[in-house]
Image (cartoon, rainbow, N blue to C red; front, top):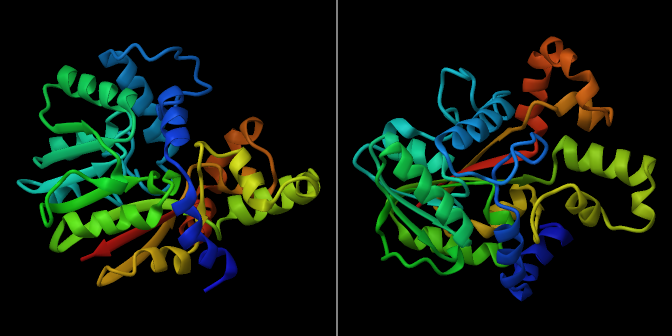
Amino acid sequence: MTEFNAKLLGAGEAQENSGNKAWWENNPMTYDWDKGLGEPALSAGYFYAIDQIFGEGHSLINNPRWPQGGILERFVPYQDFSGKDVLEIGCGAGLVSSHIALAGARLHAVDLTNRAIEMTRKRFELAGLAGDIRQMDAERLEFDDESMDYVVSWGVIHHFGNMSAVLDEIHRVLRPGGRAYIMVYNRNSLRYQVYCRLWLGVMKLKLLSMSLEQVAGSITDGHIARHLDTVGFGALARRFSSVSYSFSDEKTTIMKYLFGIGAPFKPLYRLTLPFERWLASKWGWYLEAVLTK
């Protein structure tokens, strides 16, 4: 195990989630930061607009049929959810939760913040969907042992103070043979190793005054935000019988992470998409893990 991963197992346990909760209450995950949508109106039109942003942004690999297909359909097995108890940890604005409910699952959605619960409940009300939606700390889930068939958590648990506790709780609530679908940030990604380390750290001289983790954190959401490799994640998920991995990214892999350039060159993305998909599948920012109890 690397020195970083050894520290990771214990470092989170000393951090409080109070600052984490406050950060996310003030910065709900709606993916509309630079789109000019303004304060969330919690209308059907607003939810539709932010869903389009997420869908397009994740269409490089995970939404291959977008806009006809579903959200994260390559990774999340909605087809298996009908009649099953499915827990989403970190429901945010309720996008993935709504797709889980539409798949016929008995949805249980939790989030650390009251703001996220308000948004998800409003989305479900507008869409006529049903679900058990509650404010809850995933380090201490209020569900019985072996009460869930599946757990889904996209880009959430790396923001918690104690990642090991969250994964232990996921293991506890899953039924034998149950599976969890988890995404965390990839420490071996082009974003981390090329864009943060070489472009921002070396070329922009940020490593003179910041650690690499601080450089990565400066362009990443959250009061706490970690990047893990498969070794570090595997250590956290040690209680599970098996863990398999895949990788993906948003549609900025080559232009931004390799060359440090972005929006002005977006017209070139179409020409580079096949190569970008290959890069993302090997060194994408998203480390996706399927854990079986």
